[in-house]
Image (cartoon, rainbow, N blue to C red):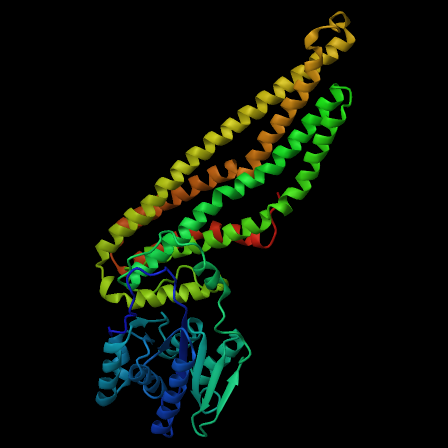
Length: 500
């Protein structure tokens, strides 16, 4: 791999760098290679000078346009991510000796080299490589003669896919040298979600950052600390309206028993008004949305770091699932590619670290969380049952006293019975509402399900013997761990959960 590792200063504010990936597609046979090289160089030079973020290129190194683009990136000092449609030994068959020497020179200096696709057909593999290039870039540069593709994987098909996807496309006509732009009005540099996450308070005053991996881990600690700080407050705030409602009801009862004293009635009415106004005054929906955004980014970053020493890019959760975090994912993958000298790992080492640090750690977390949720659910159910029994007993006793036990009507404790009934019914209501707000029963069941799934996958990982199988199982683990976080965020941001 090359030496295009970003230079990172020590003791810096932890900011995840914005990155801009330029993909390329083009013909193998060019009418004027020198002219095409000059046009590509000019375009890349302009992008490097005008875009105020880290720019890198993505392309294959097939003969013709792809190789020209790759060589131009290396010449200009632009980091290059190479996507191969076939394993290197098979890819070699498409080149003569001189051209292959140029390809090897590029591969040796590339930031990353990956093989895409799994189809048996050679043409299909080239097509898959072109589609993957579009999916991984923010802008596609095309060197194309404007003619229809002459087979699967042709330039026209890749350009058409990029246009449908809404990617900005810059088309250099391979014969005329003219330039056209498609989807040019789409905002490609603005990344509000990454700006929001970068602006969160630092977890520590300053961080010692020596490598791209250090930066990724420090940034994770920062957003994780913010998510942890925000999370408990959401549930505590959700309980306030419930408590106010119960207090208003109890105070109204006290006011009635005290002869309709205006003070008690006023306080009860004030609390009732507070119930309606409090969610707005405390910005509860906004707080929930903020927490959901930070927690989702945190967990996806945690998942990404779990794959840090794997030989492949992180693909468990992509921008198609969380498009608003595409900038974060692109930046983390760029840092991972840049950190290649520090993340080499043999299969058994990766398996051990992943099982110990990710799978078994999550298994312990889910087991403890399930146990804690079950205990809390049991306590609330006991409180509900006990409160209802006491409240019913008080009401039944008042009924009996009114009908059959009139001789006890002057008992000093008689006035306490209506208040007791109201208080304990409200206590049961509070306990039931808190059981629902904290979602203890569903969380207990879900935690146990996840624990059992991870236990099964951990056994599979133990006996896996190849990178492809280990990565496949690990991706299943990550998708299962992230599914509920993403669903919860969607429910909150789209207001499908009841407002509290």
